[in-house]
Each structure stands twice: as structure tokens, then as C-alpha cells.
Length: 341
Image (tube, rainbow, N blue to C red; front, top):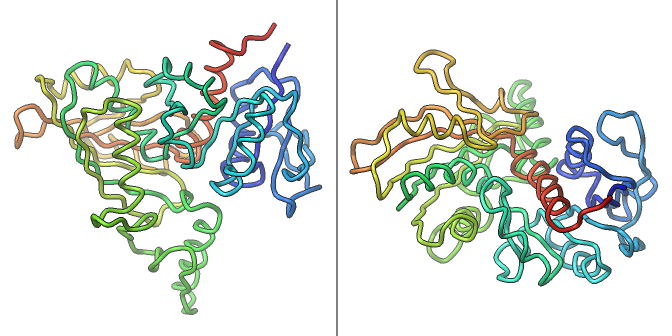
């Protein structure tokens, strides 16, 4: 006996990826519904690469009663309206938006990092998926924190345009084409030209000069991993279609050599260590696309602090940063709390 699963926002980048991941991981569902806005009602969408099609249903008229889980990839506005309705109907919401992440009654889950926290879902019947840049980072930090206790993290991100949705990907493509053919370049999604450029600005600016994306990385890491960790972030949008990269500098309370860190990371769940000190001995965003792992390269000691390491972290943001993590949460929920059969 399987689960009845709803994918909300099924026609977007993350929603489609959720359908792909459900199929790839052979998630035990008996019934699957694709739900989106009224604009997509009646359209058909393929379930992964099975050749089977689902007709998209209008969220305005969808009844969540009797469904087990709803994977939300619909943005904060739609989530704010419909997630409480789904939760009240007895359907557990796994939400990819930022709306509930810092709600004290909603667990913020990365299954490789804090699976035990999922039990708190019963307070609201909602579970939050973290920001894509946070998700891959805490997967990398968790085993190192367990080994030597992290004091401080300095992270600079190199985030792909798919983090801004299909519009961001289209803008990079159109601007790149315009540069080559000599057409005017338009910036509608991003604040400055993204093609052949980098933009140190993701989400809105806050009073202290940081951006909301940078703030998210700080507060989400504290909630997921350890509130005592000090973290500062600089988040940058780069002209890459899919795959976020991060340069992470870590200061520990206890000594941890680069070689010991490599051994720990090699055995850690969700991590693929690719770290050869030679040409091509590291992972870039191009290689990570379509893979669920968090790739770690360039592990080396930082001699400027007493116990410091630098690492390079790359992951497919549409997968581990969103769709895969949501499905992993659903799997964890099924194993621990909503057992069937």
C-alpha cells in the first residue's frame, strides 16, 4: 500500500524535478496529483521519464482531503494561501518556499543533518525545506562539526540562475545570444546584466547591508545544525544555468587536519568527495547537474587560524537544494511517522 502524493507547482522547474525524483527513487506512491495555478489547468505533464502523463489540476479547486503528503514548489504567496488548507485537511505539507522556515513550530529539515527534528511536524502538519544554498552547505558541515565542533564559517556562494526560476535561465540565454549577435541586452529578472558577469546581490537588501539570501544562510544553518555557530555569507549570482558552488572557510574548536577531514567527508551520507590536487581533480557545476550528491573538493588547511579548513562545495540546486531534499523528507516521514502497509 503506497502513499497519495500531491506536487503543488508541478509545472515549474522545481515541481518538474520533484516528479523526476519521485520516479527515480521509486517512491512508493499509489496515486499522484499535479497541481498548479489556473493558467496551467488542463495541461499535461510527464511523470519523470515514464511516458505517463498527468493532467494538471487547478489549485483553487483542489481538495487535499485524503492525500498523505503535498510537496509544495509554488512560491510563498500560493503557499501562504493553500498550505494551511492542505495541513488542516490532514495532508502533511513539505514546503520549498521560505515562508515557514523560521517558524518555531515548523521543523526545517535536511535528512542527512537533522532527521530527528522531523517529529515536530505534528504541531502544524508542515515541514520546511531549507534554502538551496543552505542545504548543500549543511550537508558538508555536519560531519565536520560532529568531528571537531565548528566555531565560525565564512562562505561565498556562486549561485546559478536557475535559483531565480525559469525566468532567470531565459534571461541568461537571451542576454548571451544578444551579446553575440549585437542586439540590445535587457535585464528584467536580475538587477544587472547576468551574461558574462557576476552580481553580488540575491534577494532584497536588509538594513545591515546584507541581502536576505545571506541572512537565510545564517539563520537556517543555526536552526538546522547548531545555534552557536557564527556564520557570515556573501551570495553572488553567476552566469551558470544549473548548479550552486560555495567556497567555505571553517574554523573549529578542535584540531582537524585536511587528510582527516577528507576521510570523514568520504564516508559521510550525501557527499561525494572528488579531491585530487591536479588538473580536473575537482568538481564544477557542469559535472553536478542531474546528480543528487553534494560534491566536495579542494579540502585544505587554513594556516591563518589555529584550526581552520577551506573546502569547495558544489551541488545541483534544483535537486539537493530543492526537489531531492523534499522527496528525502517525504521518505523520512514515511519511514518514521506515516508508515503504510
